[in-house]
Length: 251
Image 1 (tube, rainbow, N blue to C red):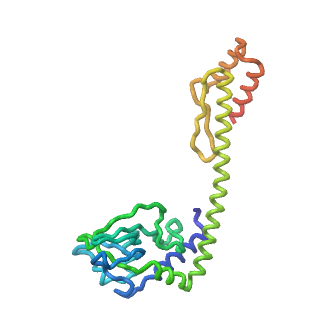
Image 2 (cartoon, rainbow, N blue to C red):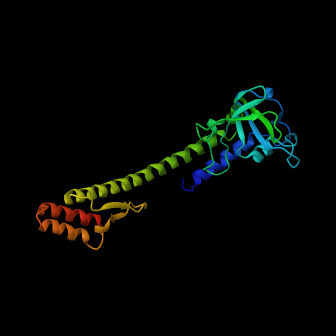
Image 3 (cartoon, rainbow, N blue to C red):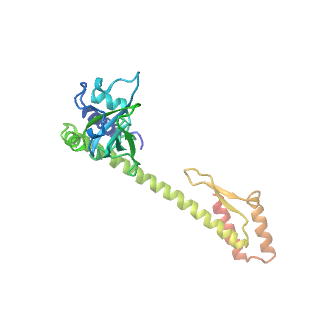
């Protein structure tokens, strides 16, 4: 999406509302998970590194943990005796391209994102429970900026859809131009009775390209077709038709 005020506003509000879900004081809103039995389906968790240089989760606020985790925020889909299976959660990063729909909180960026299995506990990973999805959704919809966020997000999405529609019109025009030129080339080869030339796209945004093949340059194609006409291998009407197509392809 093109950088715009609507997308900036939506991205900033999404990021703010997301961070506001998490307390800034240590411990409240965040509990360290040391056993899979502490988790239930639809819990939201974060994972952070463990080791001598890692800050203990118990020393962090939920907000700091979410920031530290970055994209390592997960939704529990099932639990076992010593394992938990999770799916990634789309987390806003303050940019429009990194702004999920908060109304779908808990879903991944990609609908069919594969799940992962974590062992609990794990020597190299700290797991923190942020809360249940039901509680977080209620907290989200009760946020004082939720209505403003909804309007901003809808405005940015509408603008993006307009841009996509405009881009599709341009792209459809490019495709139509390319297809029309390929059809002209096919007809030229049909008139000549052989695969003399082909159309090569330049891949540009204007659908430009050119005739390719040995006969395509230095007037060789016209000379060849004149020879066919002189030898009565094509009719005058066919030669005139070919001339029109060659002129169109040179534009």
